[in-house]
Image (cartoon, rainbow over all chains, first blue to last red; front, top):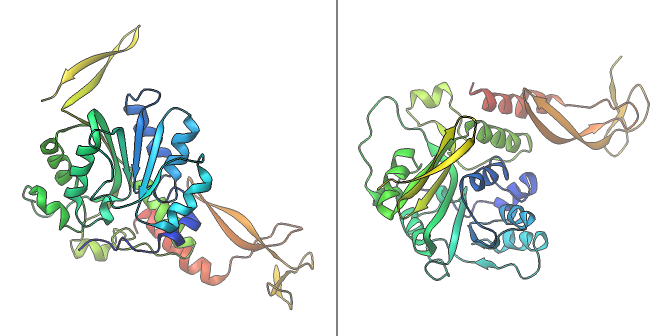
Length: 256
Length: 70
């Protein structure tokens, strides 16, 4: 079972603002530090909601962005934030209305966990990204049950689990042609976001709002955290090597 | 002296020190390093903020527990 993607995100938007996710634009900015995108790069924000990331990308003045979301209400909130004519499309992440190889980067922030067919979504991301394009994901994930071992998840099982796990996601990406560049955990940002919703009187859908209480530990419910992932298509990754005295230099390595 | 008193004003409270009705203002609450913005009744003159018992023992406790995993 997955979280209801028709949850009343508009109520959350009125509290959180255009970035309806932990950390706001902080993790988007962090991801762009990792990606070597050139001016004029085409960037898609899948699950763009009220346009927080699109607004951020637009303020940089560097990228050509497009947004897609299933909610007409949230897309309407995004319109005044962006320059007229910025593509805002109502659609589903499982069937992206874009040609293959259209984008240099795809953002999907705090969306994958509420979708039903996650594997189809990831395959669509693979399709619409150019070769060496970047995939930026951020979302809640389960930190697994420390009390028992978990078998390796088959790719199709990604769509049936309540929570994404690092093992599942990092395991499936190479099969889709991606190399992992960055995995960071930001539990504090999630807690702050949940606390903000509590103070505003809003309830997030379980398991987002689930706390790691004694009761949940006894019931072996996985602890919830928040990740930022950056991956690159085609199995090519870049690794920085610090060079004393001369600053950083870059070494290209193939990780296939 | 009780800081706030009930009145017939729109919000139902007046500042007992300043004798003026409280107004809903954006208040910043800080817990450790995190700042939250809330709309709470406050005196427009002296700045005294009213946090009712329900908020203090309810949402604020729950938010604290979330931040500390209690």
